[in-house]
Amino acid sequence: MGYKEGMLRDGALDNKTVIVTGGGTGLGKSMATYFLKLGANVVICSRRLEVLETTAKELEEQTGGQILAIACDVRKTEEIENVITKSIEKFGQVDGLVNNSAGNFISPTERLSYKAVDTVVDIVLRGTYYFTLALGKYWIENKIKGTVLNISTTYAWTGSGWVVPSAMAKAGVLAMTKSLAFEWAEHGIRLNAIAPGPFPTKGAWDRLFPEELAKKFSFENRIPLQRVGDHQELANLAAYLVSDFSAYITGEVITLDGGEVLSAGQFNFLKEVSEDQWDAIEDQIKNANRNSKKSE
Ligand SMILES: CCC/C=C/C(=O)SCCNC(=O)CCNC(=O)[C@H](O)C(C)(C)COP(=O)([O-])OP(=O)([O-])OC[C@H]1O[C@@H](n2cnc3c(N)ncnc32)[C@H](O)[C@@H]1OP(=O)([O-])[O-]
Ligand SMILES: NC(=O)C1=CN([C@@H]2O[C@H](COP(=O)(O)OP(=O)(O)OC[C@H]3O[C@@H](n4cnc5c(N)ncnc54)[C@H](OP(=O)(O)O)[C@@H]3O)[C@@H](O)[C@H]2O)C=CC1
Image 1 (spheres, rainbow, N blue to C red):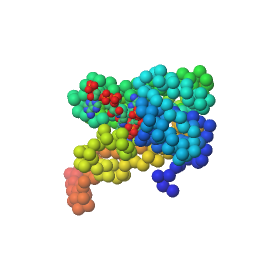
Image 2: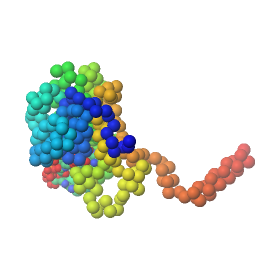
Image 3: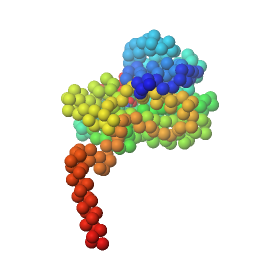
Image 4: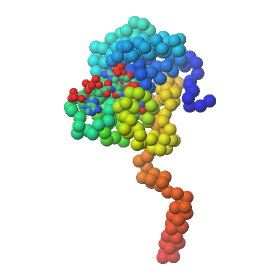
C-alpha cells in the first residue's frame, strides 16, 4: 500500500452526485476519476465542451461510472444554473460541489492590464461564489445536506508575488469557506478546502513553470519531502472530504504540499550547515554557556 493508491473503500460515494468544475483536465479530472471509482455520479463542467466530452468518454470506459459533461463558464450565472438543472434532471439531485476551476499565470503585477487581473479573479473568486451560492440556495430549499470542497493554495494566506490576482482570489475563497461553514452549518451544509503544493498538470506547468523556469528551479530541492505531489494523494483527500466519513469536519483547510509552506521558518536556513560546522557551532555555544556561568 502506498500514496499512489486509492484510500477509501469501494462504494464510499454511492448515491452521491458531485459536480467538479474544471473536471475535464488536471486535478479536476483526477478527482472525477476517483469519485466515479467510488460509486459517485459525476458532472464535469468548464468552457471547452470537446475537452469535457473526451474526458467523459475516457472515464466512463475506465470506471464504468456515470458522468455528465456540460459546457459552463463559471463567470456566467445562467450557465451555472443550467449545469445544476441538467444534473438534477439526469441524476435526481446534487450532493457535492468541487470548486476546482481556475485561471492563473505568473507575471510581474505592474505588467498586468486591468482586464488580466479581472480575468483571473473572476474565474477563481466570482466563479466559486456564484456556484456555491446557486447550490447553497438549492440545498437549503430542498433540505439537502450538501458539501463544498474548494481547491485553494497555500499562498492564500502566505501571499505570493508574481501571482497576485490568484492570491487575492484564493484568499477570498478561503474567507468564504470559513464564513459559510459557520453560517450554513445549521442546514447541515459543510464547506472545506484543500491547499495543494505542486502537483504536475499541463494547465499549471504551462503557465507557472514554463521551460525557462523549470530548468532553474527544481522542486526536489525546494520541497522538504523532496518530491511533487501525486494526483491520487489529492484525490484521496478530496474523496474523504466530500464523503460522509468527514461529516464532523467543516470550515477546514488542509494543506497537502510536502511541507513547502513551512520554508518560511526563521531558522530553516540552517539546512545548509554541515556536520563539521555543527561541531564548531556546538563548541562555541557551550563555551559561551561556560563563560556566562563564570561571570554570574
Ligand atoms: C502551483 C501553484 C498554484 C497553482 C494555481 C493554479 O491556479 S494552476 C491553474 C492553471 N490553469 C489555468 O490557468 C487554466 C485556464 N487559464 C486560461 O484560460 C488563461 O490562462 C487565462 C487565465 C488568461 C484566461 O484566458 P481567457 O481566454 O479567459 O482570457 P484572455 O486570453 O482573453 O486574456 C485575458 C487578459 O489576460 C492577459 N494575459 C493573459 N496571459 C498573460 C500573461 N502571461 N501576461 C500578461 N497578461 C496576460 C491578456 O492579455 C488579456 O488582457 P488584455 O490584453 O485584453 O488587457
Ligand atoms: N497543479 C498545481 O500544482 C496546483 C493547482 N492548484 C489548483 O488546482 C486546481 C486545478 O488546477 P490544475 O488541474 O493544475 O490546472 P488545469 O488548468 O488543468 O485546471 C483548470 C481548469 O479550470 C477550467 N476553467 C478555466 N477557466 C474556466 C472558466 N471560466 N469557467 C469554467 N472552467 C474554467 C479549465 O477548463 P476550460 O479551459 O475548459 O475552461 C481547466 O479544466 C485549480 O483550482 C488550481 O488553482 C492549486 C495549487 C497547486
